[in-house]
Length: 236
Image 1: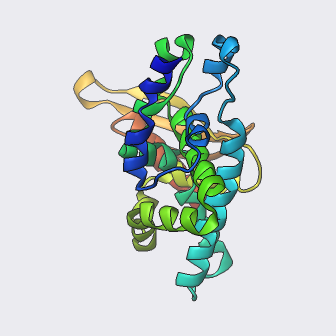
Image 2 (image 1 turned 135 degrees about the vertical axis):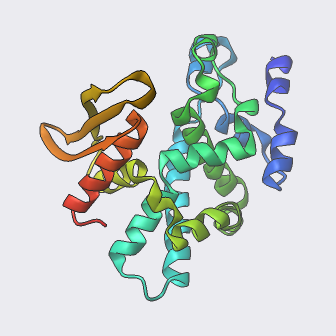
């Protein structure tokens, strides 16, 4: 048990966060993926899913409040899009990597073997759980200060429109505002020699084709298809 707890290096994580926890067990729970208690039932540890639920709300409130106060001329739609990008799973996973949060996760053996420590969804959820832990241990003001400082560079990028270049992420977040839906990308054609290929891709929402794009790589074609979908939806 002691070795398992040592592996999370909670004190180092506190240093990264710039905070000292009054109750370190809350932070330990925040970095405990559900796979670990499932494989170690005798330890009777809690997983981080409840803290993730709480942290999601704290993050959304903090970001929403900041945007509302600092972008006074922005309409509701613009604020919603900015918030959606900032609290997206892609952004959260990247911010978790900035913290090197993966070094502190408690994962089950099966999840470890299959690359869970690098998985975006696990990293994003863990960061939300950590935010929830900060809120529980220190209160909203401290968690708000942490969030605003931690996301400041990202807020500036959103303000400058830099994030809009990632049309796939933007499309995902716009769609999820109306529910838990995911766009699906399909390759329509792949033509040309290996050194000069061209890909045609369509993006669908359910059975409906919402955009098409062509590019010299699948990634480029997907971005162009997402951009066309956003244009068709009147989002850009």
